[in-house]
Amino acid sequence: FGAAQERKAIVSMAQLTEVHLLSKEVCHEVGHLLGLCHCSHPCVMQTSWTVQDIRNKPAELCPACRRALEKRILVASDQ
Image (tube, rainbow, N blue to C red; front, side):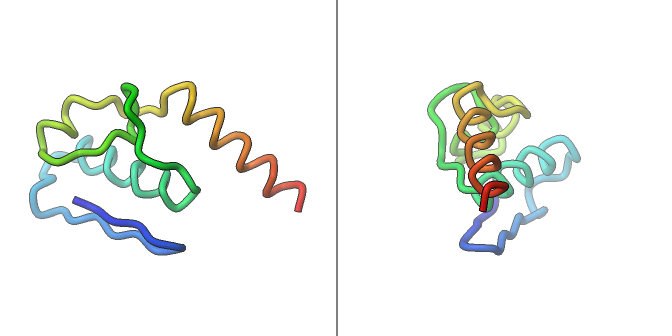
């Protein structure tokens, strides 16, 4: 559905015909661009192998990923 590397990301719309599914995958790939890894908790950063996986995962970050992102933002703002 998508891929991110360094400062670039791509998300395919071929199978994601519903806007809410596409938005979850866009958020997931932007999360990678911001330095987040895949997550095993209920989280938008969960790996999705099927459209049903995307349907099942939440559209938000879990508390652990949210904290990791906040730390990255704080570190970046100090530089």
